[in-house]
Image (cartoon, rainbow, N blue to C red; front, side):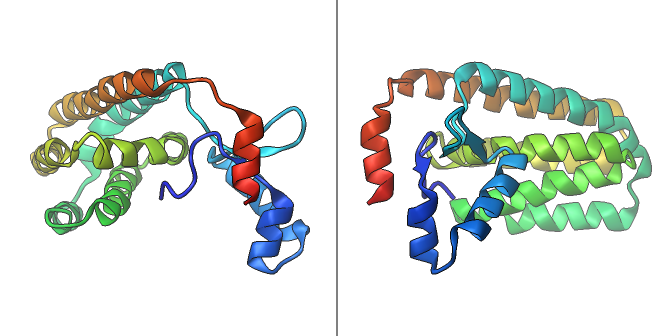
Length: 206
């Protein structure tokens, strides 16, 4: 949700005190988040909110494009009319949604596409990438005002699924990821700066 900055330290004792629990469930929760790519542990054992460097943004969005476009023919082949209507309903519900709600439904839309492929291993890998890029997808929506373009692309994707056109869907998914990748690379490069970890730790503790 963007409440914590990328790279911000997560002080287990402070979290445990704020939540009114012991450190054990906090540590377990942080490890669960680490398995989803949202938290990173350093060599000192300390946890931080995952911070993606521009090179990682480039790699992850490229990987997303490859995975989703590879699934596209199977998605178009497997989708039934009820599946198409569900996808249309999700996209329609995003039209007037606020940024947070739009991002939540965008995640669901892509997960539903993955599930239609009938390729569970590809879908699992693509889902993990979606989780890792989620904070930056929200940056694209909130800071880069990418919601309108994405909606146009989503509607075109559903049309391709309805037409059973896997090649067109693959083309759209590749463009969808590439546009976000290029915009976020520019954004992350502009904001790349040294981090004062001591000051960040003090702020996180407060």
